[in-house]
Image 1 (cartoon, helix red, strand yellow):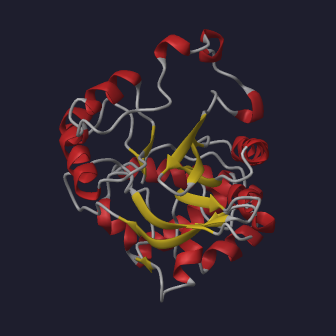
Image 2 (cartoon, rainbow, N blue to C red):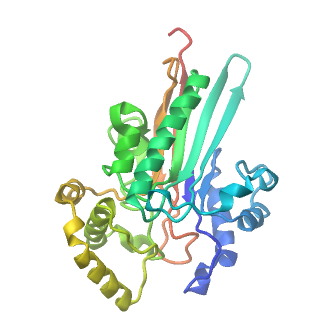
Image 3 (cartoon, rainbow, N blue to C red):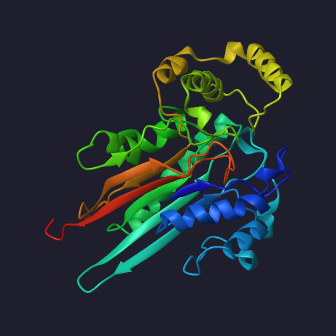
Length: 308
């Protein structure tokens, strides 16, 4: 599962505060019981708070308060970004009586505003995955995250070009006889809930993501105030010269505006492969949200061909 659980902060609607959402988050995890849970945005205290509600068999990886380089806490202004983003890396070594398999798991959250930063960050992710697979050539790879861009945009293309990584969703919908998926269009809903799946909001998203992919910086949150939409419209009008119509054409027919992805790669020795069997957007609600994102859950069959 990949799940942007939203940071613990001030909310316009008190019902969306983390102290209320933590119980809904826990219900979602208990229902789906993911073997590997990748989350984005939690603060340290927030993660510890949530951990106290989760089943005891869940342990966290990637949070080491005593091992943090304090120099990394100072914001960076590279690539038109206001701060550093992380790429968490874990190697799982699965063993049973007759086989031993490595799984490399990467979890990330790309910059929310800067298109330049998102593209440069995905280049680093791709290079890092290559380096780790050279070290573990028999390992399969799973990449989870909130990429703040949608399929067919630059970040996605960098990661999936030349079949470097496979998009679990794309593979699944092309193999309907062996893989199950649903058709929910969005994973980020901004506290609007299931209404984001309507055709009107899909059209709006195609326009907004076109501007976002063209380098226009949009607000981080979706507001319910009319004045905010007027301000956004003014900003988009000012930025209309930056609009790339090629981007609009690509997204116009797109019915999948997922910013949260699960990508995978088979072992580079071709002896181990992942076969998607299931991928869906879950926890879809119209109120009492667990986050401003809907989580994505995938199930894989791990194939081990020793004869290759």
